[in-house]
Length: 410
Ligand SMILES: Cc1ncc(COP(=O)(O)O)c(C=O)c1O
Image (cartoon, rainbow, N blue to C red; front, side):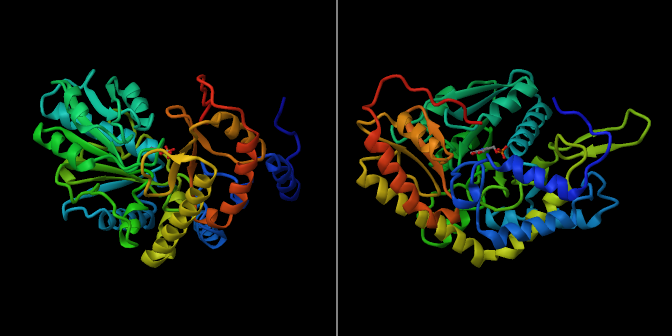
């Protein structure tokens, strides 16, 4: 068991200990992770690191002490609004991650519904079954109910089935851009229209695509409509620490109007220390995450993001072409950087196990049994290595079985 040392240790000793400890971790620096890490190369990583370190001590709870953090948050939200075609009256917040952004959007929607006379307890959120578990976490915290609706034959949300699931307790409808399991963009125009017709809040979970889809559209991908250009879209969650390549702890939650956004912050003053208003679940918030995200956005700019987007798309094309030769099929029609690969005859979980034994870290899908990859720009140069290992793993794999367990995501 570990214990606090009586005599403190010097940095050289600690640095060596850290290196030793991480020696068994995934080798993300060499493309082995298609999950958890978004690698846009050493230069981008260093910009994020330097900016993070420059603001490591600052606390974004104390905005009156650190107006520079407020200014950077405002810059980031303004950039997000520009990318996602928000109306002039839009508002938004910097948060620590996708789960935080989703939780706060759900809280804002719940408080909006309550302000309109609806009963908040047990209110319902209708989502496709592919929606991220963060909606269930948020609902669990707030005593709400998530209704998960099966997806259509193409693995995207089924708007008609979602419409059927709406009751008089429903407050929110959700679509993903894209969903995590298959990397597919849901039919947001239909979902947003249904929500608008019924006076419901439509949230688009673009945690993965928020900082990818705008650039994919610019480099010629036929991106389906998903953002504030659709009048029914009330809020969007978009993560900077995914395809925004920012240091971790960085996301945005954006609202069509200040009127909707005003339901997000929590304010309290019945204690001896005055009014405390916080926009997210957190009190203290790391200044480094804000500075890091601000620096990476400004370092990459439109040109840099178009290039990282092209690199991800090239990595996906190379892998898709290679796996097709090995008999794998993509689930649905992925257009972005996420793919789920299934095989008509082989035991895909056995293949995934063999790949894991070779150090490749990825996620899996249960239905259909698949290997899931969330690709970074850096994967462009590792596609060949991945395919060589996949070929060997597939050759050695037994035939498909009917029992599939995907194990743990985390
Ligand atoms: C579609 C989607 N939404 C939300 C999240 C949650 O993001 P975070 O892990 O930053 O909380 C993820 C994470 O992968 C995601 O893929």
